[in-house]
Amino acid sequence: MSAYRSPRVRLVTATGAAAVLFVASTLGPAAPAVAAAAPAAPAGGLLADTWANQIGSTPLAPAITAAGGDKADKANPDLAATTTGAVLTGAGVGVALIDSGVTTVPGLNGTGKVIYGPDLSFESQSPNLRYLDTYGHGTHMAGIIAGQDPRTVTGTARFAGVAPDAHIVSVKAASADGASDVSQVIAGIDWVVAHRNDPGLNIRVLNLSYGTQSTQSATLDPLSYAVEQAWKAGIVVVVAAGNDGFTADNLTMPAANANVIAVGAADTEGTDSRVDDQVADFSNRGNATRHPDVLAPGRSIVSLRDPGSYIDRTYPSAKLSTVVDPSQRFFRGSGTSQAAAMVSGAVALLLQQRPELTPDEVKQLLMSTADPIKNADAYAAGSGQINIATAARTRKVAGVKQKNAVATGLGSLEAARGGEHVYDSVTGTALTGEQDIFGAAWNAPAWARASSVQKSWNGGTWNGSAWTGTTWTGTAFSVALSSVQTWTPVLWTGRSWAGSYWSGRSWASAIWTGVGWSSQTWSGRSWSGRSWSAAGWSGEPWR
Image (cartoon, rainbow, N blue to C red):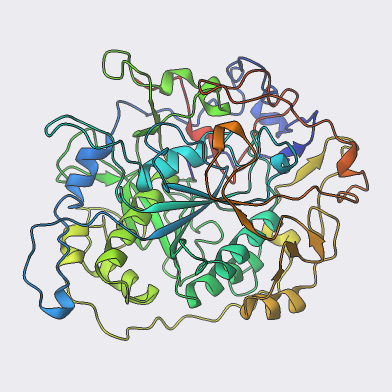
């Protein structure tokens, strides 16, 4: 989650055309709808106190070096192998990214770098927007995890993520305004589990830079149950801990599930050394029962820019200067989102080295080899910052198993939303209660049983409705994405939760030009609040 602190957002976003974000009156006026050039939030408005202390930037290369990512040797310590001198790159490991989509900007446009799983977002019905990242969040995460520029002359700087030879399996769940219901995210998790072993995927890691303020326990929450099933299926689930700061005595859902790797953010204090590093002030503290497991750098992280996306238009000063970045390829963002992405890349490295590692073994390795934060709060800092090189040369604790309360998934879908709702743009009706975006009733026991045996998806059908297609294709039905391995879409039929027909909506017709969106792609949409945390992209304090 990119940093965002206000807990007072009442309503989140809408689908289709017009939408409004309502906030508590004490926060001032609602954030403006996004237009061709989005205006800044009004004084005293939603973003007023979100990023008061953002200074400078944290390039990935020194952050990876400080974490030992450039020294993680391929030699398997469990086999007493001799150091090879060859570093891990994540080759062959698939990292599923459930987010706002991924745009294949330079650094993510290599052959096989991005594989497009299903688009479950409200934009899936627009061929020109399908799979692409109109929001900007997912592209930033993908760059941190596995970005890679083409090989260059030795000694020439080039951009590379933590696991530059890993591949991204993108499952789009959020639209340009961040609109996404928890049912879309759960469906995405179930799809990842069901298709983890599809040819060429090898999904071993799931990154969720996402969280809700669920009002029920992790043992009941269906989102928590979904990630636990992924964990049991052999997928290491890495989740952002939340960005509500030191006073937050809990983690957002599904980081609250004790099995997954909950990631907090560290602040490098603008230096390459870890000696002065601190827990970032926006990172959730948690409590004695559940707090961040590990930390990774999360303040002002430089990753790939998604030109013309919502955050790009709204926070232009989050770009680097033209002196440092003449081509304007890069963008800065802060939050436990970015920290989680770094950890996901680290996990890909360990799984390249030792594919046989179980999720529990990976978690134990990262926690036991982490670098403690000096004089830090024990809850907020967890085990400390990940040290990839040390983890890579440390023998696993064979057969280690966590002993946590087992999730049942029998709780409420509405409680899982945590007070955040999408709104039908035609009727203004909120999606509430025990139903998904198609208005299909939520039967928790039936879904939990099906999810536990990886049968909640039947082809392209989930919870009784056709969400997506049923096969892979070599093209994404878009000139910009041609030849990319892609999961086929489907035209949504019937009605939404509000009773209005999907087919009667006016979907955006903008196209991606390679530089930016050609028109007001999301005209009439509003800024999203919490779950994907776009408020972390503050333009005001960056420099």
